[in-house]
Amino acid sequence: MARLAEAAERVLSRSATAALQYAPTEGVAAMRQAVAARAAETGAAVGPERVMVTGGSQQGLDLVAQTLIDEGDEVALDDPSYLGAVQVFRRAGARLLPVPTDRDGMRVDVLAERLTAGARPKAVYVVPHFHNPTGGVLSEERRRLLAGLAERYGFLVVEDDPYGDLGFGGGRLPSTDVHSGRVVRLMSLSKTLCPGLRVAGLVAPAGLIGELVAAKQSSDLQTNTFGQYLLAELLADPDFLPSHLARLRTLYGGRARATAALLRELLPWLAFEEPRGGLFFWCTVDDPRVTSDVLYERALAEGVAIVPGTPFCIEQDGSRVLRLSFATLDEEQRREGAARLATAFEKARTDAY
Ligand SMILES: Cc1ncc(COP(=O)(O)O)c(C=O)c1O
Image (cartoon, rainbow, N blue to C red; front, side, top):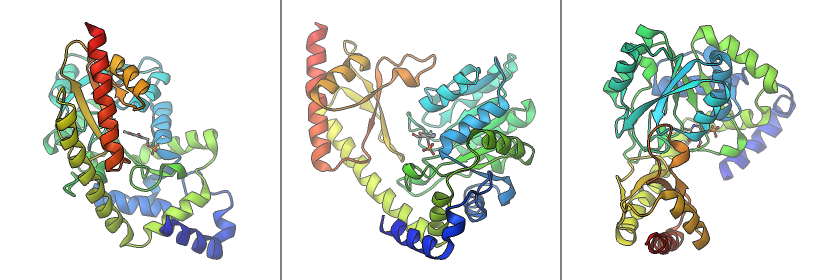
């Protein structure tokens, strides 16, 4: 917040007129450049002409769907998947082609089988690091395979990567765009800087960017100018992002480990793999009598919120899975939350008899 306040001072004293005016639909030049630089650090080199600044990655996703998908077109995606993506593709009239997913991300071998059997998705949507909700990371080998399939079958890979910088070990894999040009990258800053500004980067193939810009123009003219100036100002300091991300990884990594220990202690009926990054625990209720929907209701009554699995699931059974977030809780809140969830579980189990 202090760094944003300083950046705001500088922007207002040096560039107020431009920062408070309308700006080009594709984005302010300095922000497009910052996105292109970050894209090159984490994937293939791109020029700013292939970048559009969007109102969050959610808008990027919506514009891609509007531009690409006609009623009845197929879109392949992990099952379970990010709910916001499921909503966007459904609203665009897509037929969803759910693909199973595991710790290494989308089962690209299963996707390949479906393609061989005749499926022809226009797009394949992936969350390549610390998937929401499963926490999976699309492996290097599967990225290569997916890129090869995109080239062969002509679909577009939509790579939505808000959590890539939140690996607790610090590492991340290069974007699928190092293997294929048929990739749209959605580069959110919401999970590492501030979701409230609604400023994200989108990188698209040269042949698509014009159409995306036209779709955005008719939707909202442009992303807010002042927010773009602010973030461009912050990102212009080469030391800012690396040191900020290092702090976040240490903070969230510590919270994830502490949460895991607490869940094992207080909620032994909850099965999970410890997250390697991101913001979530994806858990299975290890008791056939309690569904995550019932637990959700019971938990709310005890004053703690969980996210039941059903809304994320397309074909998979979501009735025993749930998502927990550890990101914003301090030690006391964590313990209290877990204790309330333990009470909720006991009540749900007793009800079930
Ligand atoms: C996978 C995924 N994509 C996109 C978003 C939305 O990002 P933004 O705030 O940049 O719109 C989220 C937020 O939860 C997310 O988990």
